[in-house]
Length: 189
Image (cartoon, rainbow, N blue to C red; front, side, top):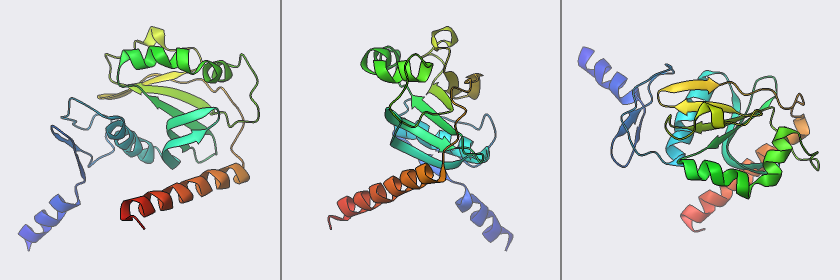
């Protein structure tokens, strides 16, 4: 009986298998062990999902078009504030972001008014500790190192506007259609 219980507890532990190692995700602890060296955007999204879920964030969605561009990860707080997370895998990608997405960064910084786009209340860069230095982060953004997990710079509130029920429904509808499109594509229906 004791042996069956031990086996059951072991099976309940969730793991994410990577290309060259295993990332255990069994707790919401701040510095849960991560053994992997080469992370993909999807790996980081999974790790962020676990952390955000533990912080009672609602509606955590990867790769969604919000505001004036695609968010690598977006979530809503229980009080309907939107958080956007931009994942960077190397420093060149971080630098290129300011050249390729000029409108987005001007909009986030408040230098230009948007055209009715959803603006996140908080904007974070997420990367490993060697990619972005804290002094490189713009004033409107925060910085999170995903392993060991730490919020290096808190993001300031760049929008006091809460997401309305209509906007939340539009986001959910988009997720609904995306899910079905993916399922249909996978099953070739």
